[in-house]
Length: 106
Ligand code: FES
Image (cartoon, rainbow, N blue to C red; front, side, top):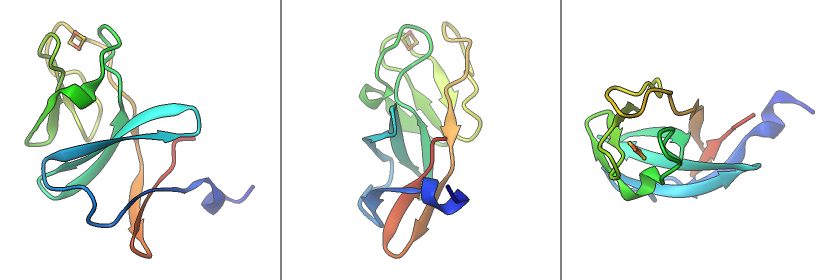
């Protein structure tokens, strides 16, 4: 399999509004495509604290907040920035090409 074949189209370019997100599945992973201040990020959907969907949270600057207990995660690195979560969420590459947003989660 070539490296390029792992990219999967997950949305249309411009589909995700500023400070909005979309839940997507890539392979067997449930992920969130996030537009934070005009920049796209792809991260794990579920909070590492109690397996709660971050899609129910909110975006602030380059962070996403879990709405259950309030932990913030850095969208760039996945780092849990405050308690009670301590483990990072996964982050994945994303690119825009041919009018589509592409992801890879291998
Ligand atoms: S479930 Fe996300 S901080 Fe507790």
